[in-house]
Image (cartoon, rainbow, N blue to C red; front, side):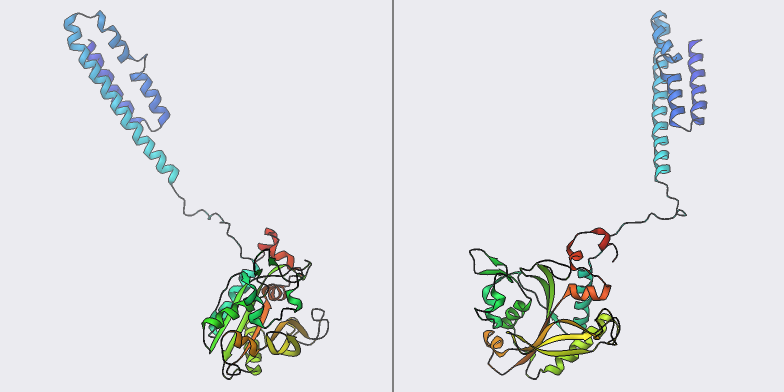
Length: 338
């Protein structure tokens, strides 16, 4: 009788497990057939009440059947777990994608990349140099006398106890480059510079410049104007004219203040240029022969032109930014606009 009961329970179990589709249903089935209060457990507990011959026949059958049920339950559990994982990993390709947050470039980085692209397209190389510079390259090699105001503490950050300064102009890069290269060459030197100045809407103590330098045997002011007009017209995506006004810089002779036609009104006059039609950008000129001599070149053999303009100034003009301090503020509301 007991053997028939065991066979009937097994048959019933096999029918029910085929219908199980969830982990919860499997748990209930396990309790029913293999739990402490299951019929199989009751059969095993009552073996002690059977005769030795009955125990010998029924005991192994009950144990083997219970082990088979346990193995089938475990296999079912693994199968259901795999199905659940597949369901969780299922992707509905018809759903709209999730927007990914991406970073934004600072306008200075954008302007730098544009400047480098334009000049490399014109055959210029990009040069680099240290931001902590020696007194020689920052001043002496650029024909800046020892008593020149640019050496004053109001303009330059000096490194205490060392004959070093924080680079106050990227012209120091041109001095280093000329010592290692012979003309002809065309380079730009973009980088960070430092000035001991009060900070306001148009001035910063740390800012970016790019130096342009062209040296050869027949370079003249006309070349300077042409290269400048090509660059600024490409940069501002409009026809830009250049005006040079006499000035003085120790490292150039002759020296010029550098103006371009107003990018907002095209030179007709507006509030941005205060009605004059021109915007002042910085200094330029023909390289002083003393600078060539300091680099090891023969005097009067080569001519060249150089200029230095600020990235921030160009970015403010291009993107209509009215405060230079925004570039270094770290304000994400400003950065996210670009």
